[in-house]
Amino acid sequence: MENPLKTLKLWNKIKKTLDEDENELSVAEKRRYEEIVMIQNYLAQGYAPVEIRELMHTSYARIRRYATGDAHNMCRFSRQGSSQLDKYRAEIIDLLNQNVNKKEIFDKITTLGYTGKMTALKVYCLKLVAELQIQYTPKKNIIGVAVNPNQKPDVHYVTRQDIFKHLWSGEEFDTKTDSAYLFENYSSLTELKQCINNFREIYIYKNPKLLDWFIAIYSQSSIRTVASFANGLLTDIDAVSNSVTSTLSNGFVEGNNNRIKVIKRIMYGRAKINLLSAKVVQGINSN
Image (cartoon, rainbow, N blue to C red; front, side, top):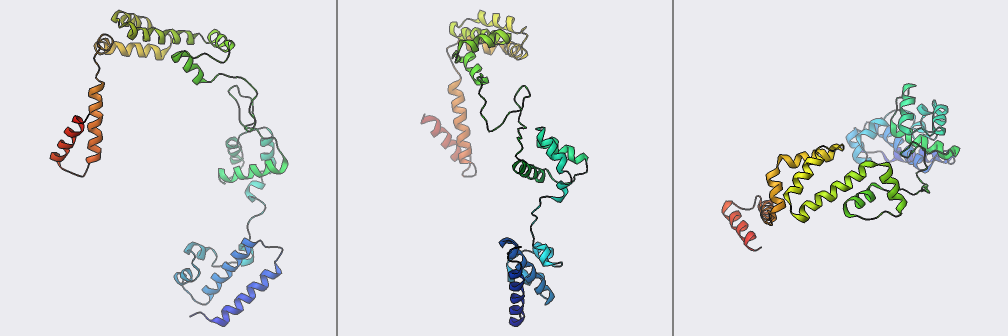
């Protein structure tokens, strides 16, 4: 059993120490100091770690960590950042001023002898940027110019989605200048637009000769993906030709296949083949 007199003396000793360090230790450090002293006291009295764990509602790892050593020193949190990174402070500041990204900074100081983690470096860099008011803008645009990620660029640009919408759906750009610039400087856009229109006309007019013409022309395209698409049509020409000329569709069959697969997933582990068969027939007939 724990000796009440020893416990009272211990708490008085802890309180006296904390009163002396009123301005030196933070609240969290005081709590840690109390925990360390209590663990070391219990160990000195002969308590087993399993008993200390139950008494203090702590973990074995913390008991092992604080079992020996000066409680006054062990309770302190680091307030000066990583001492390992402090050795490379000048190099890191210089790299931050050059807008070098953190991954490259990490690689650089690793060659100088740093053995810590990337996370610690990121925190250290953020502290330096805030402390020294460094204009750190490592993000670069598509042409390699550093940009501020918090500052919206005052420029006009066309997104890839805008180009797709124009080619496929015919949606116009914000200005005619955009269209003129893109089609003048990127000749492949003209071919892509013509390819999409020609393929659409095959199904509008339902003419297999247009399909043959499309394959013959675009299988020789300078755009690799377009040529691959045209040659792919040629490998399954019978099915593609039927899709052009026939008014029939396999959508109904595919719909039933999907419905059956859903029923199988729902009934998995619930019934044998007879009930599953009845459920499938009921599902198909209900539609």
